[in-house]
Image 1 (tube, one colour):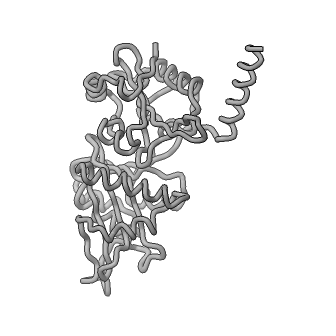
Image 2 (tube, one colour):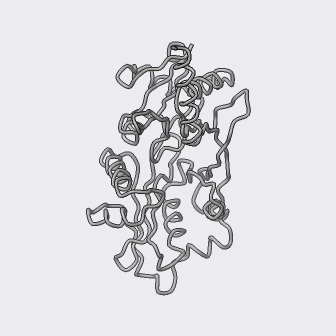
Length: 305
């Protein structure tokens, strides 16, 4: 039987134990990380006595609660000692039937009895850097060379200063309002202040050109934020930024590019030698959800009359 627990009802000792013993990759489900990126707006679906758990993030709009993945969090899903397609399907159906789901992403290790929609991400398996670089496309190997007038003018740094906030807010993509940008920035700052992950910045002639935040999980490092100056002085700066990160981080953990379905972004990832993998999702449009909500309202109203 599946039951829902509000945040304050969760036994986090049992939750953490379940994640620790899970066969699935539970990096995104870490209590501290998930609490920051969702502002603690998440609840837990539990099967049995924490035999399987599924954290679910939500937002409130128009007086309604919608299920939506938090910013900088790509996958959640079901976590258990053994991945069981039948139990996973129960979680999927429970979520779909009882909540207004805009978008929920299961993890790549979850299997289901029924066919489900899938999305694509990209992963680079850990290895020593020289071996990794040999897998770059010839085009990418040329892109990452620091030659000519770049020598002496490019600087990589790891420290944040308050003035960098302007670059962040100006160049972040995928948001619609200044409030969203500010919210993104707050999440990023909270993660850094909690020492959850790493910041890397590429400057050219003392001006920021590329900005990366890597979430540090137990199993992988994730390209959670990748912000580039627009327009770029040099189109190769993003490649140089990733190459610099791989020099530092690829030897001990896998590197997850976190997408994307966008063709140009996918090609960018593949030229580093990254391999695609898929993860299941449950998604609905707002119009579909509101139509379903209206149908349920009419059924209840007719029944009551």
